[in-house]
Image (cartoon, rainbow, N blue to C red):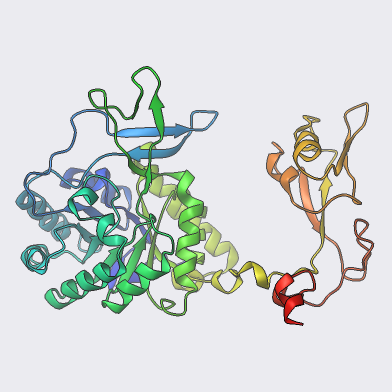
Length: 433
């Protein structure tokens, strides 16, 4: 069987599935239940030094649902832990003692001053924890106090604090990055310069999920008022995948271990993050939605897929998709495909026709008996029809072989690669000539 164990920046665990720093990791009771369920590690909910931190005693979450009320996105306005620091430290020590083979990483957020880090790091180190994660990502509440994303949006601060941490602890240091920034490569590079052993991303996205139109206030609503919060869940996965890939394929951070976070719900989600460079993955919303036992499916699914594909270890697939993650200018402009409709699978719903006729290239015909067919002369292979079709594999994209004639353009499909930087349709290339 495939070996799912990992050594992430010197932190070992029996599988790559960790619980992210969040409500599920706020106390010993939860973490013990998680480890009994099979999770390979946890990042303990963020600790701080400020005893005045108090969470709201009303609704903390806002939600975005799919048509079947499946939870697609979750917005939270919860702050770091409001439990006493000493209580958390005692519980961390107890859990690590009883589960020595599991990863226990402690998330930290203290003021952007060296004395604060010097004060809290020895306390965490004494618990026997495997590492620390610097929370530079929280977009609400704590950022208003000069912490969280307020630090994560300034590369100079990231480098400075990371350097302080590395100078004051033996523990591996993971820097958690905010997605609320234009170019995630810059804070990752700053963390790398500061000596970070790894980065984790993404933290939550600044958001308001909905407005109560009776109270005219953002939800969740606390006594008539609401606030922006952090957005997570399946809806943020595409954003997270891109940011992970940007760090993974950046030469400045190519060897920096990445812990992938953002909407991971299934083993396939996890495999995609790993393929784009993540050496471990962190889960929050899926566990909050379905419970800790969801890790069973993740472990068995990933293991079975790896066995079927002949991948013997997590290291064997980490970053495998990076070489194929390219900029647009390097895409092959000689590649031609056409949509094909499987009439045996078609249920004649007409979604493909409506989408293509109204919003695309009028490349699907509809007969009087509601038979839908692709008009090759008009099809540009945008694959909108594939995405709106409710039946899986009913519509597929088929590559045209080199040497055949594209009925839309009348041109022979060529074999050689066409780089956009030298393509005649590129104004910059024409100007250079």
